[in-house]
Length: 264
Ligand code: ADP
Image 1 (tube, protein in one colour):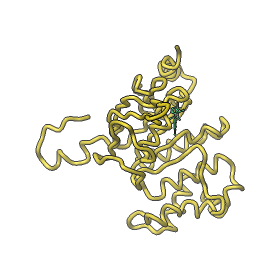
Image 2 (cartoon, protein in one colour; image 1 turned 45 degrees about the horizontal axis):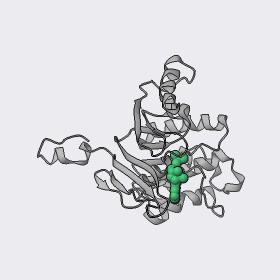
Image 3 (cartoon, protein in one colour; image 1 turned 135 degrees about the horizontal axis):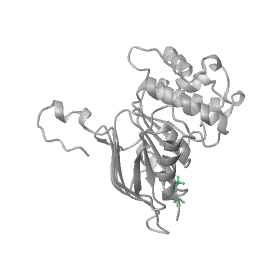
Image 4 (cartoon, helix red, strand yellow; image 1 turned 180 degrees about the vertical axis):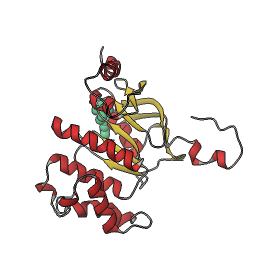
């Protein structure tokens, strides 16, 4: 974490702190019975506006880490801070998107997006209706506002999920394998759309995936976790211009570097 060596108010403000600070986070499930140590001292920070992917072998604790950052599960040790404040539960500062779209089947796309807005209210200066329609347009679903989830494709349902997460205008988007169940073509076009949304909105995105190519395509930095118990094996700075060419030598070289951690 950055060391603040000044006493002025300006220098002690949120701008000096990482947006998300994952500070020596550990997780042990069922410590009194058959204890499973899922995470062991995971430590890294995500800066405001960064796109960071977390990858690691199956069972290394990616979802557990996601749930801790989201405030859905407590860590056994360490803590997560968002803008300097310890996470103690879910909050409107962190929008969530899951692999399973988790939409309400009885609500239209529009009414799925208004769901969070009804609880938290629209961002200042916007109406519920205006905000919901703008978010549906942002994900390319303006014309599908009145459609029910069962009439939408898998990719469209994930788009509604993204629109719903964006509706309350959280500074952070947390995404847990959001495209894992989609076909390659849909996944690829959603990658482009997500990067466009990221550029347009300036959100901080923390994206969990087991797909190394997806991580290298999307992220500024890729956090590679070790096998269970998960800890940080390496943080790879991707450093490639966007849009990225998945077949280019530099892309393949970064991918290979990440994949090296998956080999015995
Ligand atoms: P990943 O997302 O990387 O596949 P998970 O976070 O789902 O990994 O799981 C990490 C480890 O923790 C696994 O061994 C899993 O079986 C265990 N685990 C996950 N959730 C629970 C739970 N609720 N109770 C007990 N063990 C769990």
